Image 1 (cartoon, each protein chain N blue to C red):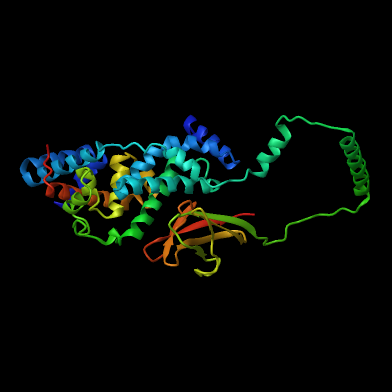
Image 2: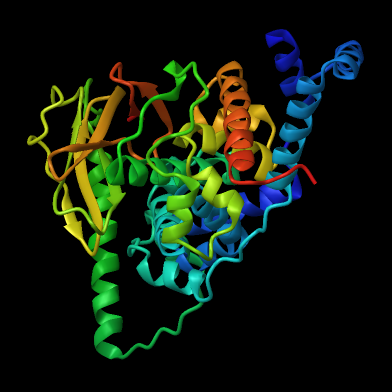
Length: 213
Length: 187
């Protein structure tokens, strides 16, 4: 019976082979209970498939856009805008003299630079990167982040909140870290926007992040 | 292989990452019904579903830098929305891990009659869905309402396909019993 029930669900999942369908249709001819169960399951699945799809409320998009955090444009886009956007330059004699002075100083500096010894700037091994974590929770009164980078202390890294958006900048060395947000000191919430998750061993999950330089 | 739809989304995501907030409204418009419906089926309340759906989009925007190009934006968004719903359900009532449940017993927390008394405008199916444990409800919503395959559901939930099929199996059995108990006949 359990085997037949498994086949019923394989049929509902679209995984059953022809031979399994034949077994079930033969069994249903002689077993009214199985037939009734199959009909009930089919009806249940049909109700789910035909359930009403609700439209998102009016002004949904506008409300989301209003609540979005301000994001400063990236260095790349600012550079692109500076380089390629058309602009009007106004000048007068004073600004022309200032520009000429800058040009002269630059030329002198460049010629001195050529005489200077070679200098190589290298990033120190094990250099830390800044990682920004954000979490949106308008209901929270305080949010902290705990992870293997702070020995899972719930009070070591409190996040700053503004209009429901909580954020923190962490200095972390390259590596893979598990972490979780701690809301109001009691609720452990895995970062909803994390790139990966892992089992925390207590029936819940932790977020996982990879830090690269 | 990427299709035109995915390439178009990647262009929009790159624009958002470069600070173009307005571009994000295209993604919100495209996926608002999907996210709102999943949230509604999970929590069963229109206002809460709207809040959770909006918070999901805001979380996604904040985490756009972590989105991996090459994967589907909708999969990532489903995952964020379901995490939000799970957090909400965890904070508002106690839930148990259902992997250990062997008997098919409807959750005693909310009966269809009680749910009906508190929300008369809800449809019968939704009331029955609310009696299921959250992780059974989740897989039924994704499989039979959103019509996703198990591979994508696995990518969204981080749960293996075999475990998802067990949850779907138990969830359907439980839902059938609740619906029949509420007087639904196989018409």
